[in-house]
Length: 248
Image (tube, rainbow, N blue to C red; front, top):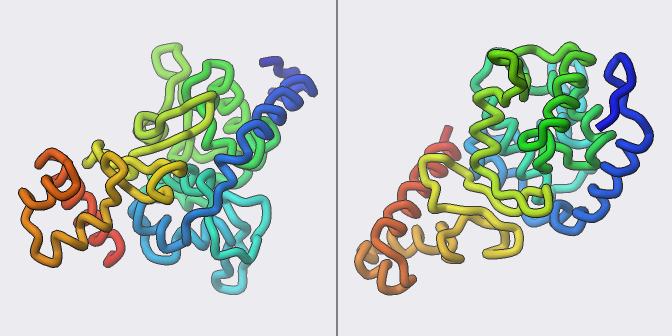
């Protein structure tokens, strides 16, 4: 990656990154979720996903979207937006408002396309981390919201960014699947399977949980869905966690 003095990206970097973004547009642009899905699946309070993606007004002040260039008016959420919301959810308990990330996301969007945080480069690539650091400095991003920091002379991911990156599986530098909750690693979301909903071995967690609530035993569910008891337990636990998030 080539940076001019002051941290500016040159035209070749932008052109190459934009090309990568076009190559992956079909997967990241799959609109398969609702705002309620995002809130439930990444553990947000009701209405948070809509604010992050459509913006909002509070006390007469307008706040632009964090994860979209502009509001779309659509009730559909793409896979790329779901992945990026999963990252922002790691910062939800911080004292600094997440909307302050917007300037950094805008700058990274120039380099990596519409969904910069759904690519591997900001997290797994050394040059990508360098660019993130430059952007953080340029926009004056609050330390509590930063993705990379310098520790012992090395540029490393912050704890929040590391947790997110560990939850995502990348193929061709793009997020292809992810675990919605670290406490249930067997549960995976993949936009190409099970309509992008959380699943274990292509068995949707909501379908199995519905049978469990109807009185089907764990052993019967194991036979019915051809899953190990441990996997059945992981599904039930995940649904309990997501239900608790929905209530909150």
